[in-house]
Image (cartoon, rainbow, N blue to C red):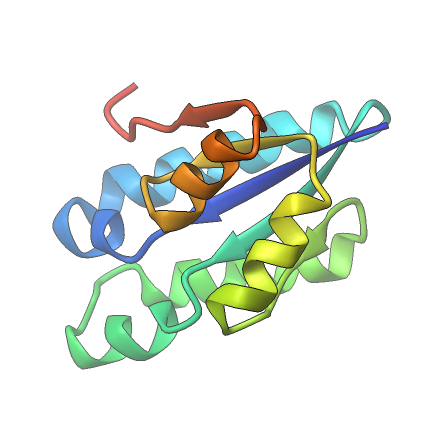
Length: 122
């Protein structure tokens, strides 16, 4: 079974909250539908909740509900590592990277791990 490292950053939730939350829901639904073939490792930016609160992000409650539902469902892994070194270690145990642009996407590319960047507009 292939493992996909899915990174979600804070910026889309602050800049286009409704589109970002819709994209997250769609992506998780797709990964859930293929969970017999692919194991998802979802790694959100570790300070997303904190900065959503500070910026009064309108989708914070929905975002937190999605996290709780994802954790409870048990079909994927919610990676709560907070250091870049720990996240890198989790990433290097995966077969592909999907998600927002960040240092980890470049690290994956440099390691020969396939990278696909998400676009919340699509």
